[in-house]
Length: 371
Image (tube, rainbow, N blue to C red):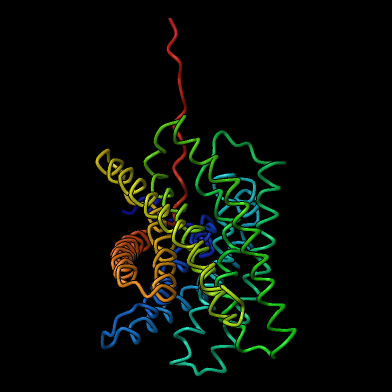
């Protein structure tokens, strides 16, 4: 005879519960995928099928973006309490910068490689739409998140994720020049280019404010927690992206005197520091791995920031003609692809097993020993 518990129907769990803990950090998967396509298309290599593979990866990033936008819409519709809690959580709120960067990165990929499959006109229209949406969100986030951090968040120490909101305008600054040739000559083209210069300065100066705090935290507080150690790679984002933007400015305004020289004078020292930080962050990640660092969504920090260094090295190689910089871009791209494959496979496993969408573990209560 069946027991009463076996006879009673189990309560149905709403399907929307699957997205309750889907945070804005998931947009990093879109960014990390799009940069593989964008950076691969500009490599100084003539490998048969490379561009087709990059276009396929871009299409995957577009699909991921659409799915994630729908899932996040469900999150905000059915779990507004959790969405508000994310905004007030200093560890999660900065990841709203990833939304802006995901939109702009996929939009840039449409112009670079997406046109091969959807046609030039559709590619420019899609790229422009995503660029405008991502730029508006990025500028909003660059103001809103620091405001929340000052007024509402209780922050114990600096974190590399603080860079995410202020880097978003730099991504727009690097992608905007791709759209300049598709605008009417004169005021329209000049306005977009000047706006990109403004976003470049906005993001660069904000980075110069945040980066010393992050480095100071490492020097005084020691290594980051194991799960957060991969976020050290986020520092590469503004470095590589600003180098890329400087090169794109020179490409979009060939008539400006010394534009190429300025891009090289800026980009080479910044790329040098980026390589220094890559070595430092890589050593700390290896040390954390030996101490038991397991997979987490923070592993996606190994993708997009490294990809910006690839595009930065590609831009410098174009404006200097140096073979060494071309091989640097190729080597960094190999690292990017390896990191992307690792993070993508681990994420797919976590999704299938349900671990990545589960509620975060609740810390065990601390009990004091009494005499």
